[in-house]
Length: 483
Image (cartoon, rainbow, N blue to C red; front, side, top):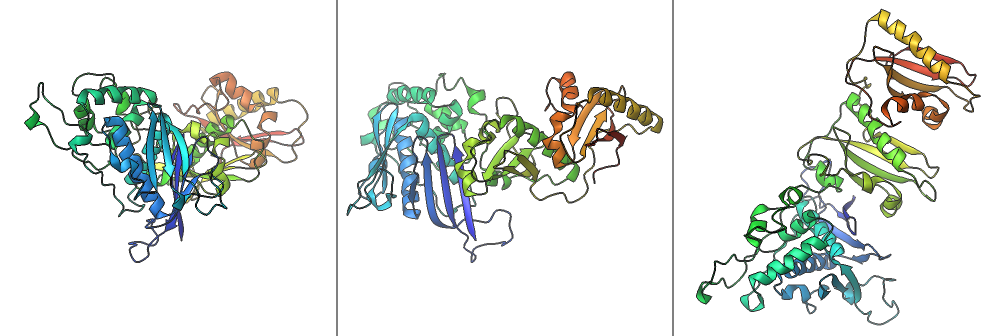
């Protein structure tokens, strides 16, 4: 079957398509099959409408050149592997401290990307990258090498750089600090440090015969930051070393499949129901531009137990191309505001942005059983009867006007022991569509300051089903559970 892998950063996306070698597959039904045969590789760079496209030869050359150039740029030690145009399809040239030229030779030049398709030999493609774009490309390559289910036999072998290409250690420190400041975050700079060999730490007044003749090579790690490398690169206190909290915080994971390969999955129906609402309440108000979609955008979204969106994957071509028309990139959890994702279980949801501007969220595998309301409940029959009457009176007094809907709006509404609304949830699609014609959003917002605030579940609650009928009739009955 066709398998797709995507490694996405703000300024760069690597998209790999291929097949699984069934002679090597250990389990044909595994959740995330191994991509062992690369058919097509695409590299999307911000500012360019067309991707770089090629096969396995192009992709292998790309990752070698990217890693070698990152080594050269951050160490200030010339690495000829980054400029080998005789045997490589991809090479880099440094323009200045913030501009870098990516060159792809004619064997992999795609049509309509700054090339002449009718010429006998198309000229090389030249793309100028900023330092931010370069490090996003470096991190995308690093994500690929951390993914053990994609081309597992492909490894990066950085060649040691001989002493004749080397520079002084002080030059490296001067080069490394501006580079780190120039990129989008110190964490990204630390990832790039992880891709290069650490320079030799020399004692004061070294003797020529004691100097190392080469820089030892290292293999990229799946971890964004490795303290030993940072310590070796800058042995004394510096602006980079002083930012330990920022550089040791893992970035948000956008490759959902890579995350699923390392954590368990939330399948409890009641927990999924609660998380489903949290996902909807995050995306719905953030989706402000709902016009212009020609096709539905469909995604598989990973969510932590506290509702944080930790990854997503496009499920159709339109979704891959139109992700910036959705709020998903901006809703990924921020490590600065939340503990890093480690081995936490995650839930999966199917999120659809429809052409009509309607948001649809549902569990990826559906519900294996009937969900229950999460949290402690008020069960005393006398108390429930009194709260039932109080809720009816409160809603009835706040509901006026002639309804425009033609079917019953069904909601689950929860109140605390004082009859104060603590939670409400639409139970059918028409209730989602016409919720503004009910007083529930205003009642909830008046108490919690937001219509999409997290429900109050810190105290026992009484739950009711509330029906708004097209005739103007209101019904409030004790909750009997989800249908």
